[in-house]
Image (cartoon, rainbow, N blue to C red; front, side, top):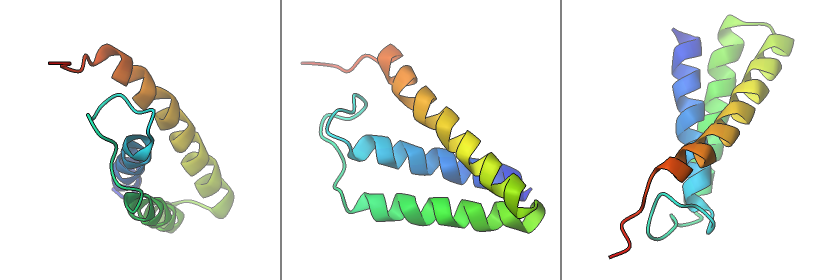
Length: 86
């Protein structure tokens, strides 16, 4: 339960990180940089939830691995999403 919730929180945090960058391709205008604090708090919450279920070393590995995969997949998925230029 905690791992599924923490994975969803990490996916949301990476999505927010991506949408606050000016090179993002999902939104017409990037999100305000104040949303990065929300993303950091989501990552910290995911770390706390994961540490409730796994050991510290497993928590660090799982969080880093999940962040790495999401940071690769979200920009890749945005290539398939065509923005309307009209």
